[in-house]
Image 1 (cartoon, rainbow, N blue to C red):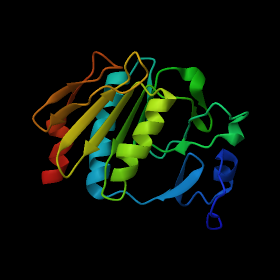
Image 2 (tube, rainbow, N blue to C red):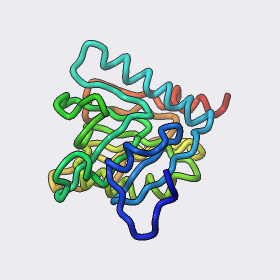
Image 3 (cartoon, helix red, strand yellow):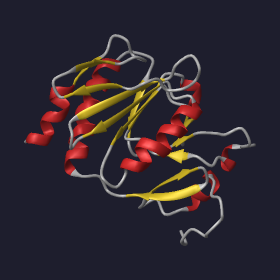
Length: 194
């Protein structure tokens, strides 16, 4: 891919033409490259994925750890290739299988989990928060490994995220979109102290 041009908006069509050795996202038409995750990030990702995947065995919902392409159409996107929001969340949970295709997920997943790093904090807390809320992602988790904090945002009846529920490594957390699933944060954050 050539370097992004100043005021040009990029779409999923552009995304498909880029070098897939590098990981890219597009938010509101603006591309950004994703850095390789840290070891702690990956250990948290694997432990969370394991707990969720074990729970989902034999059930209708599916879990997809990154890299997994999520296309979030806006009101003006006439077709798939014009979509200006393409993300690769750390963990994506999709219960509506009609949103799944060979390229990933088109439309709002039921749940997204992002593991915050210093280089992604602003994007995860502000840009993706607003994007996921607008797209209708029912539940959004932000995990902050350095502080050992989980913030859970659940979409309310007014299609806005309510005040976050905050949890620490001492807590067990019930997943709203998967009501019988409880995540043990002690096992998630134990990777940090090892």
